[in-house]
Length: 359
Image 1 (cartoon, rainbow, N blue to C red):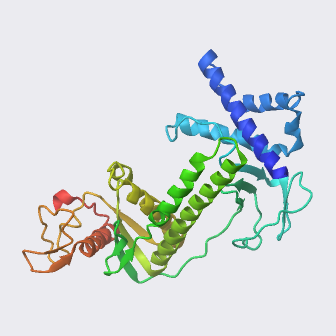
Image 2 (image 1 turned 90 degrees about the vertical axis):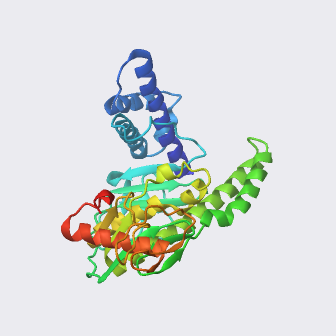
Image 3 (image 1 turned 90 degrees about the horizontal axis):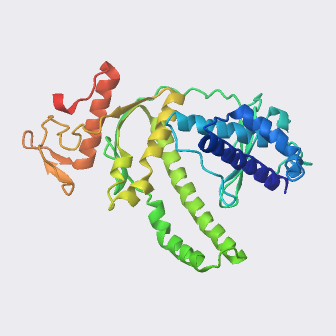
């Protein structure tokens, strides 16, 4: 109950001050910043109608105003859209700074809570780590999560001998220059029919009823399962490639543009190429690996990886072809991965730019 009240107070403060700042600008052309909203929150707590804001820790409520300020800063910097109101049935979170929690090395107790949280740890904190921020969140599937921020030195990995080029696809998620083809998990496709059935049941429930709430939770749990399975696959694959290879070359893709293709948008979204590249990027930085992005216009599929001859045209339905110059029979995807690796090694060794027009 304490967490539920804290979520509600933080959400209310965020939405109330968002409305305050929006009205101040559109009605009076007046800019309201963090300090003004903080003073407004203090005055609001003193009113009889909003005295319930004092029943929870003041830190998560105050942090909500900081998050609102960050949202506006991202909007003015054109990094994000205009801040939106937080929903009661959406993801909930409360952020506690060091003054609002106690950590004794084994248990975590939050302000205005009688007992420590019952946590099932997914990993242990580093020895001697001093947490600075604790974020408790609840997703739409009803699951609670605790995220603890602390200083952590990532242990270095030994230099690997491998070098790999990666060509991403839909039939196979990743094709490696070694010739290995990693099948696409098609996570969403596997649960698509079951999800459609559950959503049809949800649509028939009366709005505001208890049965609708239960049906909505069931749908959210299935969505969460799909996301967890997909994330697990991406983490295992990216970690394996980072452990085995010192240099990783991958083609840069304009995923947002590719998703404009109505026939492929669902499969591209299910593949989560952008998330895979994001994981490779930060893991390579952590462990001292070299990740090279190759320009998407580089003719990796049309160039023979044996002799360098480039075919003028190659439709998507051509999956294997014979080079007219050297006679080598090339698998389209494996050949592309090998060319991506060669281009990546050139960039890594000499700092060259891979320009398809100059090759």
